[in-house]
Image (cartoon, rainbow, N blue to C red; front, side, top):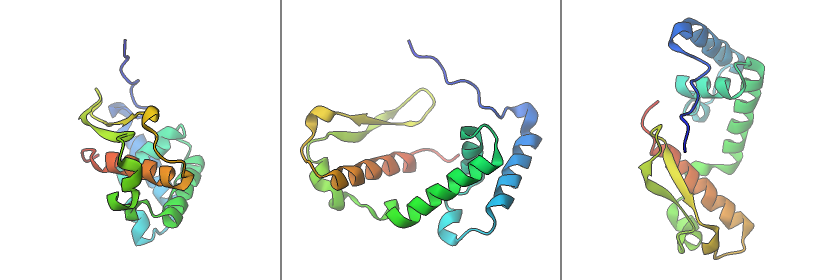
Length: 139
């Protein structure tokens, strides 16, 4: 029924090439502000490269846009009391189990929708996804 995720574009036989691409992306990004460094770990840079088929320019652009969004939206400043009205019905939550790859699972139940505030719903989605990401093991 479920298929395993295909192997990463980076495999163990080309770890030097992987590291070279990561270093190239890090150099292309230039100096990072302190807030940005948190989201530019080696594993994070590898994910951006993989998402853009190892193309450094596209990966850089995607990461810069994400960092810009984070600076404006400040998702780390959204706390449960801020979105508690949205969370009341259990319309979305992080599951207590992980998928086969060890990733967090977010359950969404649209039938439990309880508000019409687009902004509130978006903030709750961001809160839930950030919470799921923070629950992942290192790397």
